[in-house]
Image: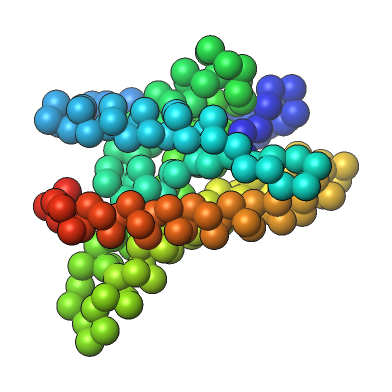
Length: 200
């Protein structure tokens, strides 16, 4: 899911870096110190999840869990994912510093949708349990779907030679969308049973 350095044009990298930078600074300014432990914990989950690779034919895909991070943090998911991406770039060469803004917007922005589906799941309805399960599955599924779509759009905007790669990037993440949806379903179901206050 990471875009590596040397792939994108400056016309994409620079505006993305500016927007992401302003957003991170704003969130840091508005940050409540009580939220720091929660952000740190979710950042660690995001960081570690990227090392779990799933074989897929001749290649492999890795977990992101952006939706799960967003489910618990809302807009502060941007901060957690920023820290995770920065550490991955510095220590392991995943992505890179120059494309940090692009990767943050691509992964972090859709992660916020996770919070929307959690809030949706807490509304009263006739078939509450089934409804909640669907919402919790969508936390992981939709977040990664949007990230994959954004990745494909970025690659298409980068040039005609990336059209085939854009389609492949979207297709290769379809299996991962389902996996992340299932992980989100079970993780949030467990939290709902033991401490549903964390979801409010």
